[in-house]
Amino acid sequence: MATDILIRFLGAGLINVGGDDAKLEKLQETSGDLSESLKQTPWKAASFSLIAFDPEAPENDPVIKEAIEALQKRWPTYVNTFASTPITVIRAVLLDALIKAAVDDDNIGLAFVTSARNVLPLMEAGNESTIWADIIKEIEEQVNDRAEADWATPETISVSAMKYVAPTTIKISTPKVEVDRALLTKQIAAASGPHNAAGQATGDNPNPQWASNNQHWIAPFSTRMAEVIGGTLDTVLAKAQIKPIDLSQPLTELANTVAKHVDETLKAVSGATAGLQRRTNLIWWKETLYSPSAQGSYRNMPPSVASALMAFDLFQQVPTFSPGSVAAFLHEAVLSLPSCEADKEWPFIDLMREALEADQLTPLREGAKQLITETIGRGPILGILMHGINTPMPDDEKFRTLVGVPAATPLTAPQWATWVFRELQAAHASQDTSGTKKRGRKS
Image (cartoon, rainbow, N blue to C red; front, side):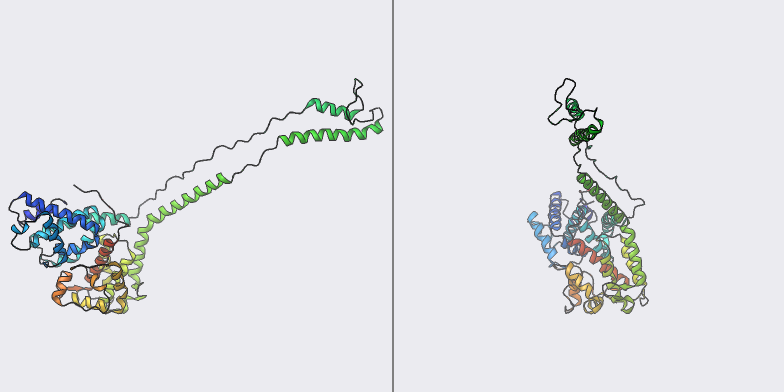
């Protein structure tokens, strides 16, 4: 899809290069340059989108100027082909650049889709309508695939088996010990009497008595034999002593492995049930109609104020990537406000003025200040809100230039809420590069 946007515009008769393939190639090269630039500055995605959507985009907008400069580098003589600033050609090139970047980067895709859902229904697309419909559908499916993965609750939780390498077998061995029988025999003989059968002295300290003198012999014999046998056993047991075995290392390794496995199991359970927990929290939020940022009930606010604050509070509770059904959920949550009239409308500029002045919407303005770091020409309404409560509201003509839709455009409270929510999502996606999911280029 990303390679045929310009051809689609040519086929619809929206741009004309006189059948010159070389000129078409220059436009495609310019689109590639802008796409690479956009990947380096993803915060421009909303501005690129809002200009690409608008057939009445102002020629002096910074995005138009940036595109013209890129075109001049690739095609210095383009002015000989077009009588004036070729707004439709530039818009087609911007769109092609956006799609190329969005195919590779989900964050840019989200900023593109959310901007499209806000602005395109208010634009006079004319012959472009079929092109836009196909483009948005494909990118939205890509973004929703990412969102559904973040919100999914699997039927089963798979936990890998605990991986533990058992320590090597502990070998216990004892030294080979033998009794010195010759020495033992000599010592027993010494305990038995002063001489052996050969008439030789039995030792240095033999038993001076013979067994015939039982009364005197028995006492030294028993004492000496106890010393002989006890000493021999002590010597044998001392040599057979088993050294202490240190089991601290294998037990520590086992404990660490079990702890790691339990931690991974808990993370798997937490990750698998995160989507369910998120949905449960949102239902609770919708039923209570309580604002965590304002610490009060939405029921006590005008519906136009409450709807914008509900958009901010919902944004705070969900991931950057959320299914399209989340915006529909917000729509229904706003309708559940007791004071909300489903068909009541406010001019866009009045809603903006209120958003700049209402005390309850301070969290929204502070959030805009954190999300929007720089604005160039046309951009999201958050770029106006970020300047705070003393910001003067632009006149109707300037409003149209900055926002892309007429100041008098009527919006209901649910429509206003979803507009704010989508812009918050787009701004956060454009600023968040840590969770960017890069993709291989589709054919």
